Length: 301
Ligand SMILES: C[S@@+](CC[C@H](N)C(=O)[O-])C[C@H]1O[C@@H](n2cnc3c(N)ncnc32)[C@H](O)[C@@H]1O
Image 1 (cartoon, rainbow, N blue to C red):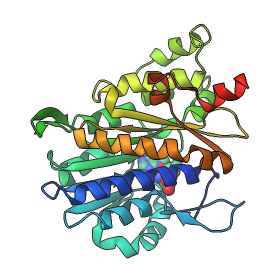
Image 2 (image 1 turned 60 degrees about the vertical axis):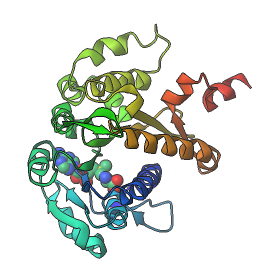
Image 3 (image 1 turned 90 degrees about the vertical axis):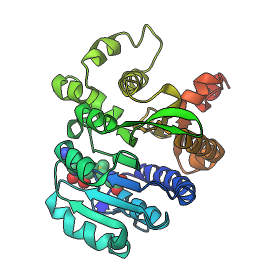
Image 4 (image 1 turned 180 degrees about the vertical axis):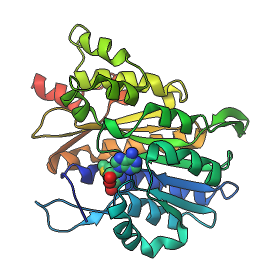
């Protein structure tokens, strides 16, 4: 069982809700395989020492929802730390019929093999990229997955079918280590532009995490259009800065509809989250609609 920070609960709730919406949708779309790949799986469970009960980690959440998605749905798990593999198998065994393979490899190399072996170009696939920090994920991996694509159409609308991505953008860990090894951060972003952009943050009246999000979103924008990229900011109220962003990226018109339902759910739940000590924000939507975010409202009042 993995000890985690309390805010990890938020990530798991968001992931569960997103996949539950996807599952409802794919059930009615039987013509394509539904494949979810967890490249940084850990052991499938999580617990926080300040709480009572352990809860389901990403691998178990994924396997559970995939098992409800109908006949042609399956998942692949990967975890580099080989000491976690036995527990991962044990913790997910009730869903083993939908787990096609569990790899003990580096995500930055195994992704290509997984794409080649398990992900047909016309499948509906989702890759969860959830490293502890930026040193564990290279942008070349994100690019490699995004390039696994084909031209397609849906109800008369043409689009490029790419795997969907759910990425943890660990801004807190990046900013904490920015002077230590710039090259590792550059590998994570796939560009060194973040260095210059951070210098301009104050002048542009942006926070440093916002700047990093902008750089990452622009990089993703090479493959996913703006209306298919949804970043959710996660911060705890005791530590008033984003800890990370969970970024959802998709190209399929249905996936974009799912993202809208998901954003509605997040907006509805904000009060509950704050009662539990968290703050979540759908930044893009707040900016587009010129909404007063909770922080700026508090500053004004
Ligand atoms: C933040 S944890 C993942 C938590 C899990 N996704 C969850 O939500 O329950 C990151 C995991 O990635 C693993 N990891 C780190 N570097 C990796 C790499 N290059 N390839 C695959 N796994 C890696 C770590 O051992 C750790 O278990």
